[in-house]
Length: 269
Image 1 (cartoon, one colour):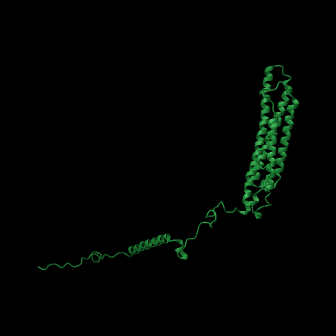
Image 2 (cartoon, rainbow, N blue to C red):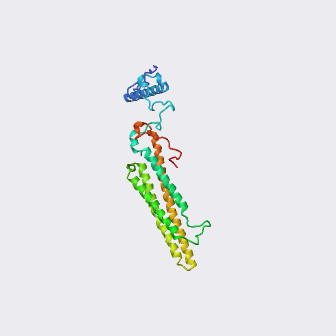
Image 3 (cartoon, rainbow, N blue to C red):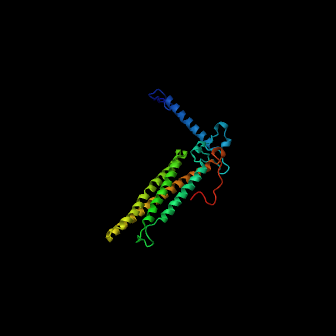
């Protein structure tokens, strides 16, 4: 009996087994994968090679600033500020003069607060109170307030209030002016109570009135203390503003030459 011949098995698609036709789209996709793998390998090879060994077209563009002889790189802190910022500065001589003026007035306030006392060393209201002496606290407080008002008005008329430091300084001066004007009425009420106290026969009424005198006098001194603190804040604001001048030490960026260092008196307290 003749054995059947074993020829190639033909699939339903018409192609012999083992010779299945791969669609064109699959071959193209496979080619793209091979291409992507080759490009990734090339990129990894370029990244691993030293920059000086690469061709000019493949050398990376530096993203950092030029080298600095001190730190190796130029940082943002070392970069010069925009020259237009110098227009925001208050002239150095004006700043130093204003700091001295504010500090001197603050010291005057502190001296008067210490000088104008109502209670004696034992912490009690003296038996013999002088209307004249207490009314000097009223006139003295008015003089202090007048000086602060003048100082505030003079500063408000300057062009310095056009920048942030000037506006902050003016705000502190305005606060000092407002607080200082409130001291004199309380001092006046204390002095007036001395005249009323003499006409009160009842010891209890005298006791309560003396307590009111203590409260009024302490309130007046507290207003002066807070005004003094506002003057200190104004001077401190200008002192901080003065630190900006070190960024503009070049004559081309300064309105005028930098003055010599302050004398023994100093400009910052």
